[in-house]
Length: 302
Length: 320
Image 1 (cartoon, rainbow over the protein chains, first blue to last red):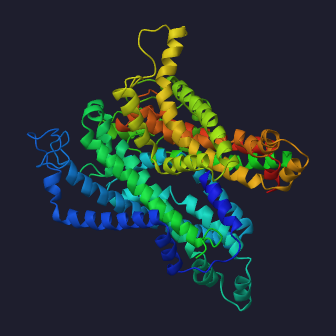
Image 2: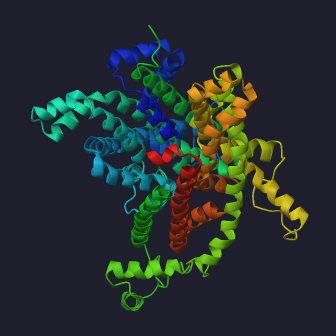
Image 3: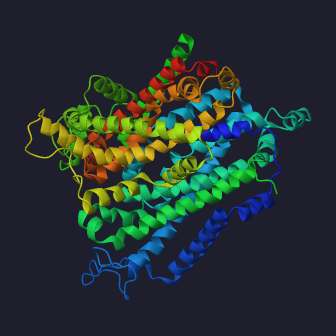
């Protein structure tokens, strides 16, 4: 349903807006919440990637039978889990893994969605009709379940195959958005003019239409990143995300399916839960600010 | 209208075909034999080959597909490899539980979403709207499994108001008053978890729809004629913006399915989503195949139903 709304918002936006990095930047500077979110994201990313280089991954996932379920202390900043593994270290590595897969899936699904959407919208007519029925079909499927099945049956399971499986069932939303925008775009004079001058369809689509809808692409991909982080941690929570030896934020949360852990050992799951929430909200705040910047009518007067 | 409905029905057929092909393709990738599950993996290679020939697993795929589809059409999903029971029996028990859960969630979604959406749209940009918008903003970014965990933690464990697992207390006579009360008691937390997150879309839709509608000419006319504000909202805007919501439950099915997979797992509620995770963990692929197919079917038919209802309540849809 939210897609329909976003579509609606975009359909209303007929007049072209002057795009460019500076407008995005201005909007973010003006929106304090987005600015804080962006700073938080940048710092977290740097910290998480930086610290995880220093941390010894094998040391963190090593089982220590003498330190099971230690509450937070000076030795273990956030205590330990059922294998005596340090939660803080897992949190750092987990955040890094969740972020990386989130970004990877967003880029890959974005690529498929953009190409699919822009081709469908540009050509319109029967091509569009058939392509959109395919999108409709995939949209309505219970995709999380299908991803889980493929995750289980894929041979040689790794982080890459996991990302590919996610991508295969998460490209439809962006395809729909881009398509509705491309439909309007192709009616504009510059497309007609370029066509008259003899440019090929491929050239018009990829060197002229695509740059013009770049702002929509950036906004959608940012919002998708938030969603994908959530989906990844959800899958890892159920046990169908990252391979066994690779912690993710969802893996930490999955320990909370043990009632005693949920009830008494807050240090295992609460930090991960908060981190997922804050990450998703921060990405979304930035995305919303970008969305306002991309829409001349929502942009605040300067 | 009939033209729209017929066209919509025609689109559904290839969707069903695609779904069955996708599930069939998935099942054929699964290790072992997900369709009949009659091969004992401990047999020797020759014996397995012989079995495969006998069961028709060496036939071309379209013949196997045809056999599988006609079996499914008759309600034959094969036998569970873990429970040695027909998959249909296994699913049937769980399906009823999931239907109750989904039904209650949908009731909550409407009961919470419609008032919130109307309030938020009617008094937009006032304090009450800002609170509701803040809630939808947070709700949109909260993954359902985190929310359900927190709900279970507070209301199930810390406060102890609700049971933390199962679908009914043991030792109660099915059909008795206590039995029904216990069932509801077990359902309440999972259903609320799904509803409080799932309601976000409905509230956002209603809000923007009402803000849109209240500037339209026919509303201004109604006001100019002297209709009191309550009548403007309860009659004119309600019919225009709220009735279409009635058709949305079909679109919500995909959301409900995803929600039930997580929520049933967290509350150990014995429904289809729980069965799905259980079966996939023990590699009981005939059950997995059947659950995915049924959920996919429910989602496709739900969208179909919603489109048809919507075309009846909201004539604007038909023109598109």
